[in-house]
Image 1 (cartoon, helix red, strand yellow):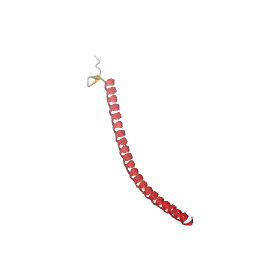
Image 2: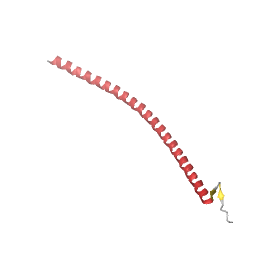
Image 3: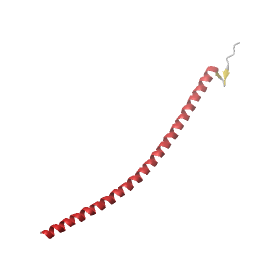
Image 4: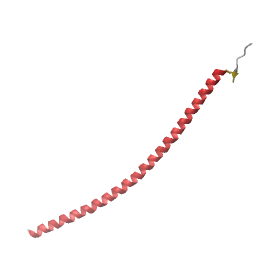
Amino acid sequence: MNSKRTLFGLPFPQAIALFSFLVVLVSIWVHMEIRLAELNIEIINLKQDILIHKTDNRRDMEILRSELNTDMKEIIRKIDDIQIYLRKNN
């Protein structure tokens, strides 16, 4: 009698195929977990960059606003001087 070799009740080629399939599934799962972790890190870094740029933009806007106010006051003062000059000469 010729008995076939079995592994866990499966013929040897099927056992190898099942083992290979399970290894592939685990490999894909590990790869996906690693990629998700990388994406989460990228998202966290992007959020930090957004917050930094948001703060920088807010500071820049405040500087521009104060410069604009200063410039407008200077322009208004010069217009007032011109008006005063024109009133005196009329």
